[in-house]
Image (cartoon, rainbow, N blue to C red; front, side, top):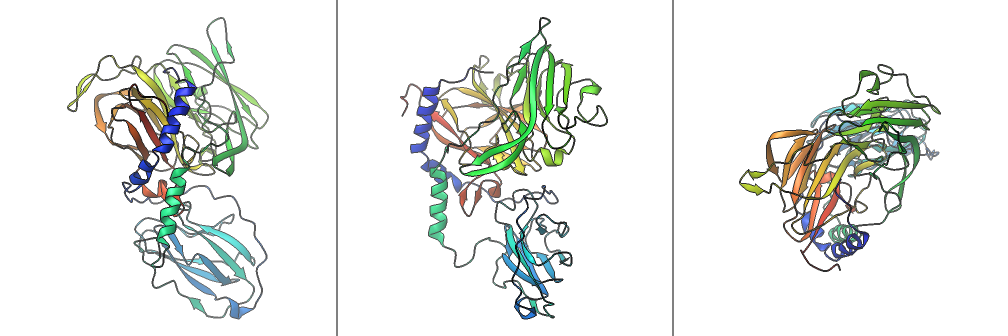
Length: 486
């Protein structure tokens, strides 16, 4: 790893970035609308409390309500229906959507644009329930609502969806435009916001044995995690941080990782992208017994070859990963074990003696308790990248989420030199690096231009919402060479 910058320089430059944060406001307009992939579903959101509903009789609620799904709204947002009634759900958008009642099994199938479905509500007792679209990122982008079920038959009455709703926009004609402008400016002005907890911290061996074996300890546990200012969630993770601590070893090292399970259920640890013996692959019950709550298991292997790997559970990973159980596992040194390109690449000169100022694992997520985030934080709590002009840095993009994320850095191109830890025979420059679930891309960036440069997922709903900028956004702050800290 490159040597960390001193605290004085970092804090001073962050202050510079705060004064220049207006650049983020201008950059917000550069985002392009794109919809998430169809069919991807996240774990249900935390259950809402079901409250007793009013009992005003059958005249107070219809037996059917027409509901329209679009990018990114549920119309109407507040729905009242008689007990035993149903929802007539139509997807009038272009992306796939569904409609689910939180903390129940009541949900439509995933609907493509133009498809319809009837959602019977026979099993719901009178009360108030939360609604959402389960496609990752769609709820945080506005696809939420409230369902109130009341006593009474409701007769044959049907409530139609709003005929004035425009499926091409998620704003109404009477939208408060000034409030939208103010919300965007307010959220951007908070960057970088201070929150409790910092993930991805280097994990030192708790012991190095006489034979050179490096021994690490991971504690799988649940804990409170501040995702963004004032928003605390129950995370599932390792050693009290999201992402879990970063482990780095040298090629040829013998490694032991002691895993303590303090979760309420069994677990395992899979070493994704790392060569290990079959019985150390971490797929219970195929390669090992499940690590039961309160038990400990030790993984033992030799770091045989360079890797930009990651670790996470395989057992019920669909629930644990979105809630925070992931971390980086790096074997070897970039530039040496994983070589950099040099000479002319794509019409640009790459020095053959590059010195790396920073090496940054950037782990992406989009579902569960952690949601749309970079290294366990949602903007404005994401951590800026602070560099000096003409420095070179390495970013390792990791996608531990459920959908693709095209990561776009403004102004400065990214030289993709390795995919999943394997050096590329034909490295290439990209301004937007598309990272699919499970993939890792390693890029070189030359900090050529001073300023505050936005780095974000180029799917609009992963970076912006009505309440302003959020989620998968950070910035690269480039100081002028030889300039003074602000």
